Length: 371
Image (cartoon, rainbow, N blue to C red):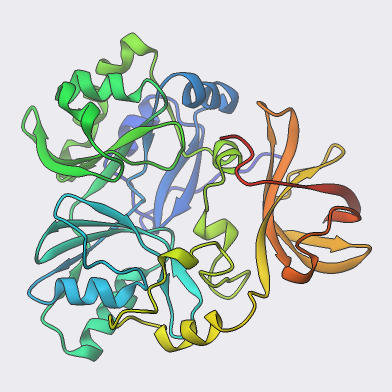
């Protein structure tokens, strides 16, 4: 069954919107109140380019929350249980954000641009409102805003060659999550070694909305010798690689989770005297057995892809949920991730995933599925 999405002023277009339409985008989704390409008509070819070549993605919907001012660092630390004291300028950090009850409410990458300016590259939720409210409650000297920033991702094993052609060979020495402010033929941007795949790549944080098509075309031209093509963040590859999707694997209210359940326990600093939202709740949670664990599954049979979480059972008893499943071309199997009650975490038999009126047997599998 085919659907369409209406293009209207209530949802924002990205800096690359016109370029993606011109280059054949066939489907959009909505993320952070913006249109984001879902695919360009041949998802299998887009997957193949990501795995063995290079692809470019409009990820401008990966919005930035900017914290600026004398207390910017104080607010950045208050937002996350991860200790940021050792973070250097030009360094990114993966930082879970929690509410006062200890539930994860986002998992952005934090970029430290200066001592008094930070970006949070957020997943799909209104973190700018949360951050602004916390800053106001604390009466801190910090401005929370959304800057003119539009990320463009270049991903895949040949991404490094494309980016080197654009910026020079020194980019090969970037550490993961390392970044610097630079320009490309006068186009202002931040260049980071990052991206939502395990295939390697970079993100170009464009800092001038009006130059989106120009930047898109420069990347397209530099990537032509490597058969670059447009695509979108790939759900199949992210499942194979064990990447977490905030909107799919955990989200506020429905299928919410704590950092301990998601495997973020090592990023929660309860030993130091840093102050952060939810510290008391996380301290209490850390003293208790983790009630659920993240799980990987291989699903037997020709399971339909429901596009929403479904129940996971053991001997007919509801023991958790599957957040997303997809057919892995590399494994030749349908794979899935979800959450299971910890007392069933070592169960190897009698697991089943329920999609509609059909039950599909499932077997445990380590995450990631492919290293």
